[in-house]
Image (cartoon, rainbow, N blue to C red; front, side):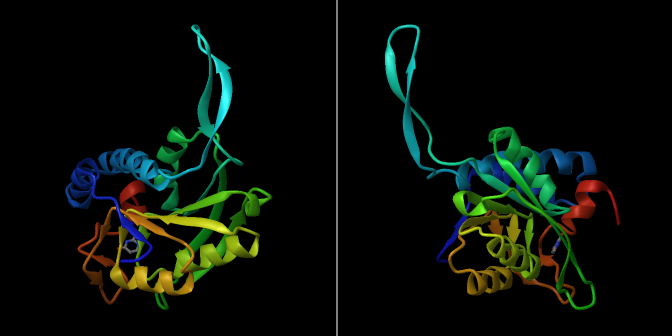
Length: 209
Ligand code: URA
């Protein structure tokens, strides 16, 4: 699918299987999500631009590669986005963080915004939006709408699982935003859950119901 990268690394797929298993505990689920987010972050940042910086090793000077441009922004779609965010910050500790609070109205499945906080000058930075589940894509679309309204022009969307319907909706609304995911599952059910999926990511991360 155009504009969509499925990260099929064996470690990602192995960890995802354990996360899908309904017998996996909250503690294991959270730890695996953090581990998987490191691997997904590695993929979503694979083509970042580099420049060089003059340094001196103990042996000689060298023009050595270093990331070009302003610090990245990771935009977490609350609350489940925070499960991906933690691991990504382990890998890119200097990244700035935006929080976009969205909840899904369980009747309409529409996204309702309740919180937004982002660094200034979003337009100068690559913004990587993170939310584990791209289901209907309503919250993802609304989060990206909001970030664009605040000036973001260069965005990527990273999730753990996607439904084909969600990918299609998202790409229709934001064709300029590439999607990275560990799997595109079969479909959405009538309640808007990804099938086979892993259930409610937020509930499984935090042990809520
Ligand atoms: N959100 C989730 O946490 N799980 C789904 O399957 C769909 C949306």
